[in-house]
Image (cartoon, rainbow, N blue to C red):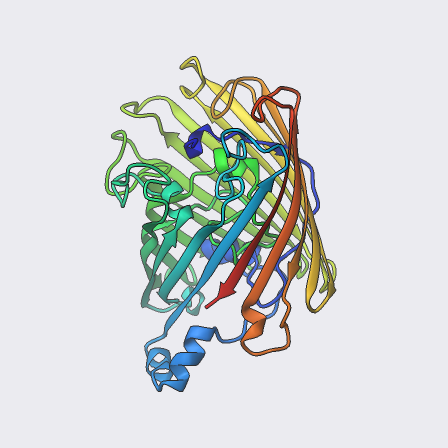
Length: 412
């Protein structure tokens, strides 16, 4: 099995579909992380775990303290039509196994959200755990990284996020976040229920370009009515209680709510990231444009760029970049069609063989078979068909790779 850092990043141009209600959007998640307002989508109904606690008489107590418990369960399966001898889907991450049923995630989250725009003092935070096959790929340095490998054992625990939020009456309302949190850079999420337009198979750049989490401090405030700024320092990409060097990194984002239908999100991470190296910087830029022209139709376009002062295959500086486009259309209450296209190029071997370009086109559906039922609406099926290709024979000795996959998500 390949480690996440060796997974190829693929470039793309695409269209894809958003997970139908009641699943939240990635743009809303990023806007929330940045302190923005999000674009499109109704307020989600009360989650199943909280409804059960209501029936048990505990829901009101949690509400009185501003606490919420929620989560999800995800399992998936992927078939590679090339029948690879390694039983691995090249350059993939959470769905890299051929012909094997995977328990991807059991997620449980306890949170108390703060309304930092209220311009008053308040304290909250989040504690999120996952158990399953995906956890082995996202361990931060010094935090649950004692396992023997990403699939040794197959299912592992990881505290994906644990942070404290302090709302302050500063700059008309602001927030200080301290702890471990998911990365601000990129349009895809570890959490499969959070993507604006989501697929079971993540993009190439998600598996080989993204840092999954950071550990540090972030400050968020509204620069204008429609522009939210987040900026802070972290220990670096994937660093936790331990750090691979003695330097800190910058992490920040700008969320511009252009109008009620469009938003532009730009994020940056900059700092020394190589082990025992405080002088050579890695800079990551990410820009994502979100557009929801109608209630049923969504579009997303993303550009991603990494420059590393000492990360190339030969130890010198190098860069990689990717482009992606996604779109979705809700055909009916129960089904949404989606499509994604991606182009990824690693010029200097930061993640994959130098000079390699990867492409992918993925089409799929979001199916909520019981969309009108109070409990059944929390069941989501995401079948997909994906075509990966390259100018080189990098897919188990071939220049292309065909896969069909599906995951099942139950929102808790």
